[in-house]
Structure formats: structure tokens, C-alpha cells
Image (cartoon, rainbow, N blue to C red; front, side, top):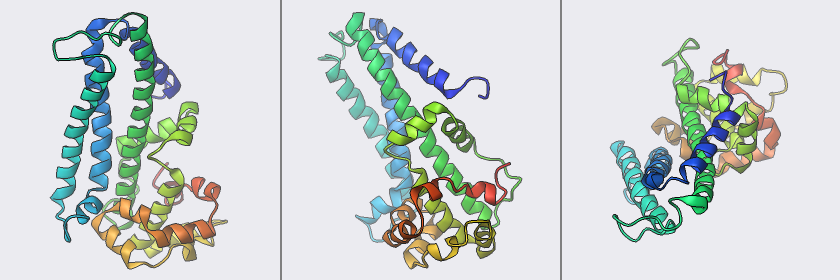
Length: 265
């Protein structure tokens, strides 16, 4: 990973899609790969927000409902994306040939566009999975379930690897799903809810004196934390209001909570 920068990998992905776009036999491969990527992204998002989604229909959702909703979103997205891409490529049926997206120059252009889109959603999905992994590990750490010697999840490492690259810095600016400012706000809330001692470890750092009073005491945050419903913490209006009143985006974006707690070497 250290020897091959993300910039090179993304260029290779887009280049490969462009070349394969000239080959008619790879049209179905395109569709399946793109549908799988978007289906995974949709499934992850719905799984992480499953409790909130289910709560709109059922008063007291069960833990298994998030998993069921995530799997359903994964399958339905794959089916829908394949149908949409098949239509855009000019496929009128299972046995027909792609009229515009399967070969020649139109296929190459189609491959270039699809390769760029695939690379974008691939980065978005990895960063999202990495954020969820970071939040889960942080929650376990502040409640004493793991210590600083615990291994950092692979997706969290991949997220850091991407974010430290030039392409990762550019992608953050157009990422519709991941916001490092909001992520750090959630992390602050998780630490405060999980351990006052570890929260004090952050607030005693130079320049962070205002953090302690910036995180509100809110039963809704506590309930979401107890259920591991990080999406609800993110959308908590009181938390958002107080965070924005006390911090600038740059202050939150530059706050490295794992470093302050000794979770990251």
C-alpha cells in the first residue's frame, strides 16, 4: 500500500475501464462491477442508518432490522443499477448487443466515464466504511472493551491512506457522504458519553479548553450512543448547534482524537 499511491491506483482503474470499454465482451462485466460497488455503498449506508429508518415505521425497532434493511438495499440497488446502465448503454433485452456502450470509440468514452464514477464511489465507500470502523473502535476503547494495543481496523487504515494522498484531499471536497468535520463532532460526543476520564484527556490538551462545555448533555445523544446509532448522533440538532457555535470547521477538521488518546501511533 505504501509503495503504490492512491493517485496511481485511481489512474489505473480509470485507464483499465477506458480500455475495456472498447471491448464489446466486457459490457456485462462493467454493469456487474458498477452495480456491486454501488450496491455495497447503499447497503453500508442503510445498515448504519437502519435503526433510524426502521423507527419511522416501528416504534421499537429490533437490532436485526438494520442488517435486514442493509441487505435489502444492497440487493435492490444492484438490480436497479444494472437495469439503468443497461438502458443507458442501449440494451433492449438480455440477448441483445450494446449499441453504443460496448465497443469502439463510444465504448471507450463510456468506459472512461464509468471508470471515473467507479473510482469516485470506491473512494466514498472505503472512506465511509473506514469512518464506521473508527467510530466503533473508539466507542469500544472509551468503554474499556479494547485498549491502545488493539489493532486498527483495515478500513480505518485504508481511509487514512486515501486521505493522506492528493487524490484523497481532492475527493474530500466533493464527497457527498463523508464529512470529517461532522465525524470529529461525533467522536467528541462518543468520548464524552463513554468516559469522562478520557474526555478530560482531550480537553486538557493545549488549545482544547473549550471542548468540554461544547458537547451538550442530551438524552437523545445518550440513547443513540447506547444503541450504537452513530447516524443519530450526527443528526442531533442540539449537538450540531453547539458544535457550530464553539468551533470553526477548520478546528474540528484538524482535531485528531485518536492521536490525543494514544490510539494511533
